[in-house]
Image 1 (cartoon, rainbow, N blue to C red):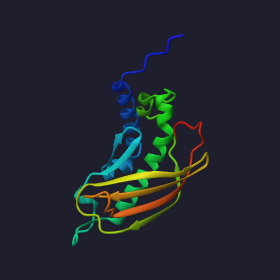
Image 2 (cartoon, one colour):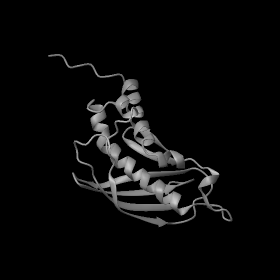
Image 3 (cartoon, rainbow, N blue to C red):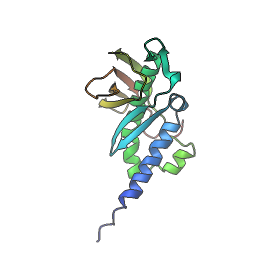
Length: 172
């Protein structure tokens, strides 16, 4: 029996990009803060686009600590969700068009989240990458690091534990 022909790479890329965009736009606070994601394969990098409304201390100026924490937490949640959604998208079990219409998978819920502020976040774009340390059916542990100019000089890092939604849950 002949093997089915693989999909063109562009079709796969468009399907993944549409699903990620739907996942991110499903979180209104991420839109308010200006958080986006850059996808390279299965790796996500959170991007906090600078805006004057993000400044907490105008004398320094520095990005507000709450904005930094929200950016780290949002990066952790979206990355954790992406690790579970991506295989379903590739297997066509989840349709990105339905996701864009509002039929989103449930997101993990934060159990605890600890942030370490290493230095002030300067008034410019910031980037973050999360690493899923452990994931099971019920709980997951994620580490996140945020930087601005140099990845090896983070301005904040965090670790969190999350309650995973049931595997068969859709919408939320």
